[in-house]
Length: 187
Image 1 (cartoon, rainbow, N blue to C red):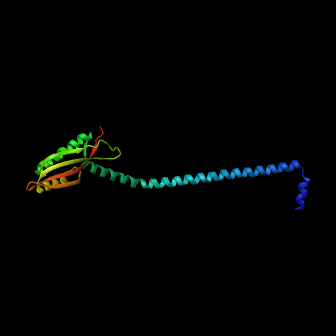
Image 2 (image 1 turned 45 degrees about the vertical axis):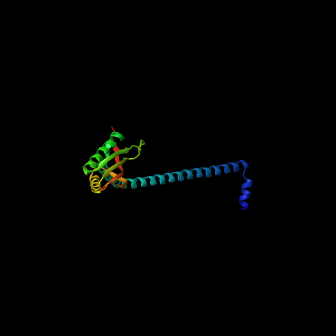
C-alpha cells in the first residue's frame, strides 16, 4: 500500500487528473454500453412475447372461423322467424294482419288488436320488438285453437300476459299482451 502512495505522490497532478478522467470516461462508456445492451434485450423479449401472442391468435383462427360460421347460421335461422319491413309501422301492420287472420280463423271475435309503437329505436340490436294488445271474445275451445295456430306460425311471438274473464254463458273475454319480433330491412 505504501508503494502505491509513494507512486501517486511521485506523479504529476495533471497526469493523475487525466488518468482519473479517463477512468471515469471508460466507466461511463461501459454503463452506456450496458444500458444499450439491456434495452436491446428488453426489446427482443417484447418482440418474442408479441410473436407468441400472434402465434396463439393464428392457432385460434380456424376455431374462430367455425364459430363465425355457426353464428351466421343461427342468425339466418332466427331471421326466418322475424317479421321484416322497411319501417316499424309497416311491420306492426303486418303483425296485425297475421293476428287478425288467426283470430277469425279460430272463431274468436276481435274487439281490438292494436300495437304499442314505442317510437324509440334500439339500433344496437339485431332485432326489435313490438307489444300488441289484443281484446277478444269467444269460447275456451276457440282460444285454444288460436294459441295452437299462433305457435304453429313461422313467425315469433311471445305471450307477455293474458287474462280470461267470464262473459255470457259459455263465452269469455280474453285480454292478451303479445310481443312480436322484427328486423328492419336496410334499403
